[in-house]
Length: 328
Image 1: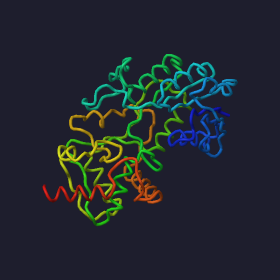
Image 2: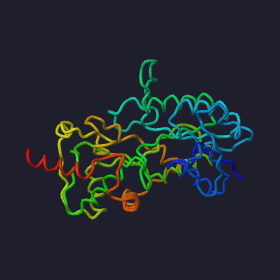
Image 3: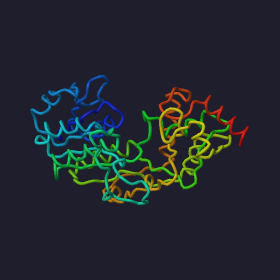
């Protein structure tokens, strides 16, 4: 039986990967703080990765596979130091945000990475992942796989980015929905369960190297149209210009008072990264419509009018639509 250690396992993606390994017949141990239950069929070891003794219990035995999704580079480095010699293979889930340039369409895994943050600079998400990757490479060498997903989407998404659109169209019904301008804008998404399946397969085959786990590029107008149709929305999509949205304090990409997935102009590389290696390795990419349907069902279950981590409240959206109509 394959012995798998999931560093995490109680979160959204890490839980899906742990479940996939358990479904494949592996013996799965999840190391997490214990605030949430581990997936059915796995064993939870409660530990705080910020503590010096976090890995003491799991370092007493060998592992066939260790999986880490952490964005904290200090936690990753400590795990590699404590457990690197105790595993046959290591899979680290990184991100395409490690790349330095977003203006080069079709870039692959050889593209230049961000430079590490200086001593007086804040370490953003991408640079933190760069530093974490470096620890994995230096400590594991040719026993490690580094998987760089794009935007992870699907049921249970805690960021509320992708689900905002199909959920908003469903909530609006016959009323209008505010959207950004879509010319030369797009997205590149991967369903959380496709990513979990791929991470398990990488570990099972003990593949090593770096791979972008990203979907096929999709134009933002097509994504909106598909979400609009899936939700049965009969109102209009009302587009606002970038400058107008910025003047009205609507944010890009994510977070409160944002239009999720909307990016500044001039970033075609962000949503057109090469997924050739992912496909060659057998990575699955389910149809966008299937992911939208799964996401809509989840949005309805969680509540279309719930407080969200990303997007506009419906009240704010109505106020912006009224302002746009008044002043064009």
